Picture 1 (cartoon, one colour):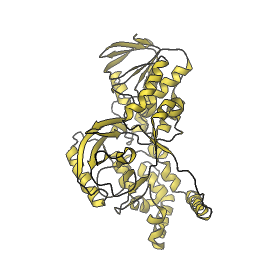
Picture 2: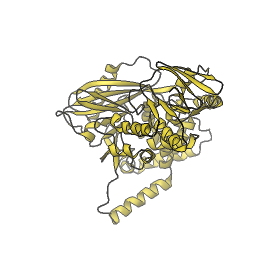
Picture 3: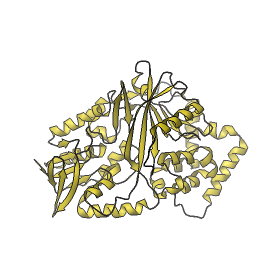
Picture 4: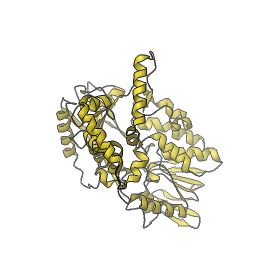
Length: 435
């Protein structure tokens, strides 16, 4: 069969949620198409020399709406106690995103006075907030923005300075900064801390977080594909889409395996791709961040106790180090981890150079002292949207054109929307998908 009521491009979280919602809404034929050989989209696992490394999300909350749709995915996940830390500009390892006591109060009255004065000057500014840097400085002040390492972290995250990123992105996706820039937040935090010391809640359970199955992401998402198949949804992976054209009310797909037709096209793949498939003259100039992920191993346990370590320090291009061996145990006496480096507008990626940079900075920080092996790497283009100046205006035009053609755009990639958690992805799909 090559005629379907609905065709969903992409078998990541967005595509899986859309298929489940449509299958419950009415009796109809549904097809999911994806270029990847396994479900999960950009959540990818790689087995190398007995290690299983990851690209993508690394932990989940049990309350994630995806698990309500697919309890069988929840059953595959493992419970873990996950500690998240960060390297500070001083080069030491501490709490994430930062410690108010260690990095503010302990530095003395004069330091606190300078920081508060910086925040007050920022709040009195008359110039408009047009960039992510303006937004961060407004809430934190120039002093803390630099001293806590947020400036360098934002630049690492996007591969570009914060003054090149639209304020619209910051306002919608950096609310944690605004929250911590309010006195109310710290008063409530202080009250909770005092209450905990005065009336300790002994025996309180730790927050439960989940990670993917030990074998990798395919084992996490395959049960969802099986469920969809039982509901009559067809899933075709490892597909090569060559073009899409509109004939009246029908979308006609030309693929490496033949022609597919549908009246309802739901897109969760990068906006640039769907515009290229449809041969549109808009959308192809929207830019994304490329993610280079290095897979490493070493003999001695890391010199920090967190499973995830963010780099807010002055050294190294890497953004995040994730200790897979903390989740799943060492392999043949070796610890192993993934190291992420976001890259923007750099067509020539030298992995050996990035690896040397990581080794140098990790030794300078004192986080990994044993010899480090580069086991492999993965380059993922279109890892997440680059919200550079002017992107929002371009996106509005693109979504309008696609909507006019009858294309439903959903998900992180389909709507060019940076969504940091799976929960936000699912909620966005639920809010935008017309069933």
